[in-house]
Length: 539
Image (tube, rainbow, N blue to C red; front, side, top):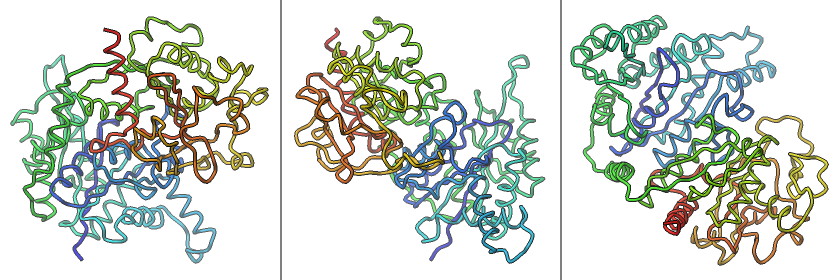
C-alpha cells in the first residue's frame, strides 16, 4: 500500500484569511488530477464542538451526515469536493482534552503524570491520522485553525512538527497562508508581517514549504523573489492569492499559480493531465455571466453576520447557476419586522426564505413576513424554524387557533402547534443532544416536493429540538395546507406545502447542507425557478 501524503495548512499575520477556502481549492485541484483527497479541520478553542456557540461568535454550525456539529469550513469542503465529511473531519481542543482526561480517569496512562507533551500532542497526532485508518486516501489536507503565535495553537503546531518528523519530508509539507498588507500612504505592499510570521513558525521547528499570500494587489516579481529569499522557500512556491469576486474562482486562480504542481512535486507524486476541472470552469463562467437576475429576501435574526447563513447563501448560488441566474440576496432582520413590515421591500422581492434559528427573538417578525408572502403569492421557502413559523402563521391567521405558538417561544401557549420532541424533554445537557444528522423522509405521492425530488424516499440532515405537534394534524391541515413528507419511523412532519400558492414549501430539515457545486439541491433549484417565474409576472 502506498504511503498517504499529508499537507498542513497554517495561517499567519491575521485570522479570517480563508485557510478553509485555500485547503478546499487545493483539494479540488488534486481531486481533478484523480487523487483521492480528504480535508480535516483542527480548531484551537475549548468548546467540544460549535453546537453551543452563538452564530455571532462563530458563524454557521455545519452538520454532517453522521450528526456531527462542526465548523463551517466543512461546508466548503463538501461543496467543493462533493464528498461527505464526518465527525472525524473536525476536531477541537475541547474534544482532545476531554478524550485525554477520560483516559486518565480510566487509568490508561498507568499512573503517569499527564502533560501537554506527549499526551495531548499524541492525541492530536492520532486524530490527524484517523481519516487514513483504512488507507482510503492518497492525500490528507489538515487545516490548523487560528493564527501561528497564538498560545492555544501551540500544541497543534508541535504535533505537526512531530508528525512531519515521523512521516518524513517527502510525505508531508506545510502551506502557510499569510497576508501581504497594502499601505496606501506609502503606495506599496509590505512583506515584513509575513517574514515575522514565517520566523515564528520556524521558531516552533516548522519550515513553511509553500507561501500562499493573500493580497489586494498583484505581487511583483521582485516582491516574490524577496519573499522567497527571506522566508526560505523556492520562488515557485510563493503563491499569490488575490481577491476575487467569488470563492469558486479560487481553485482556478490557484491552478494558474501552480499550487497543485508545487505540492505534487514536493510530495514526489506525478501530475496527471485531465480535464476533470472543465465542469468547474463552466460553473464559474455561468456564475459570472448570468442570463437573469433575481432578488431573494433572507429573513433571519443573525443577518448582520453573513457567515451565520453560509450554506443557504452558497446553495442559492448553486441553484442560481443551474437556472442561469444571478441571485441577489436581500438580508431582512426579522426583529425589525416586528416593528413594521415595509410592503415596498417585499414587493421588490422575487422570493423569500425564512431562515433557521433558535429562541424567541425575531420570531413574530418571521410570522409577519410569512403571512405577507402567503397572501401575495411570493415564492416562499421555510427552513427548520422557518417551517415551524409557517405552521404557526397558518394556525393563527387561517385556522383561528388563538395564540398558537411553539413552546420554545411560549411555554404557556394554549395551542402548542410546535412542541419539544419527546426524547428531548428529559435532557439537561445542551451540546450534541438535538436531533442531528441524516434522517429518512417519505414524500406524499404527487406532492410538489415529490415532483421536485423525483422520488418519494429521501434523506436529509436535521438540527432541531422542536417539532410539529401531531395532536393538531386534524385541526390544522386541509386541502390547501398539507403535510407533504413525514419520517417513516417517528411520523414526524418533515415537509408542509400550501397547494393554493405558486411555490410555498416548509421543511423541518436543512437542505442547504447537501447542496454542492456538482449537485445543487433540488429544492433550491426549484425555488429559484419559481422566483424567476414570479419576476416575469411582475414585468
